[in-house]
Image (tube, rainbow, N blue to C red):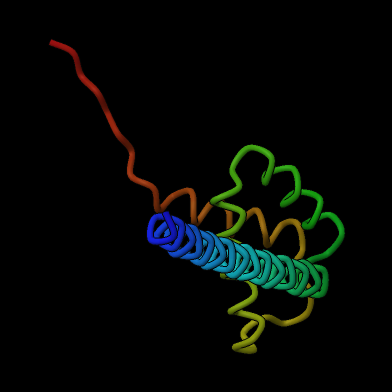
Length: 118
């Protein structure tokens, strides 16, 4: 009986060790995910602050409204504006009219798809 008890104890110890290792790994993954979320939040805050410096109030309002329907397009425009500002190619704040021109340029880049039925 003592051999059987010894085998059970060893097996139980192995299972507990595996479970502890799995829990440690899960905690590490959770921490990494939290760090990534925090980095993403900080990036979004920095982007928002830069956009506030680059755009006038009316242009920001237009961009916020557009973001509700086309978030990918707005993200692309925001990145383009930030890059232009960092490169020094923007003179002053971007007005609503200038933003409209930029939106037309980007919208014009999209391909028009025609479907014909026969």
